[in-house]
Length: 175
Image (cartoon, rainbow, N blue to C red; front, side, top):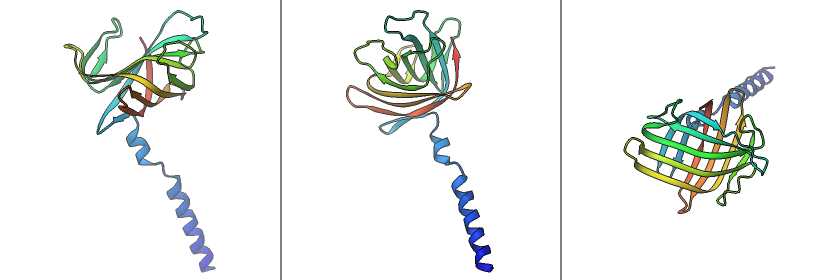
């Protein structure tokens, strides 16, 4: 009887331990890493362009803002010093960027589930245009709509193989 009780306690403990979420997942959320550097993202904005393209895709401009950066919702002007990821996403949905894997398109074909004109600003001062600017040539964004929250899992790189990875998870407000 005692061994059955001990086995039950051990089994229950194992279940409790395995059900706890990983702190690493939460700690890495909204953090973008590249080389020995990293920056955090805190807010997202999107602009839907009114044109339905001949490819059947609807273009959206996505802005993922890092700490210290803001966008004026009336003028779309970016201010502050920090990091920003900006890209054009081409969705099969004319209301929002739909779920799916979006691939960087270096040829700008503007096809559904494509991304182009992707630029990452790092420690950039938008008032005086100084800081690092990385033009993205390859990679993917995996997009998940979680209700009011959107998730963008990022795995992209520049021509000189600077590799950016991470995930933004937060609200996306329309500009």
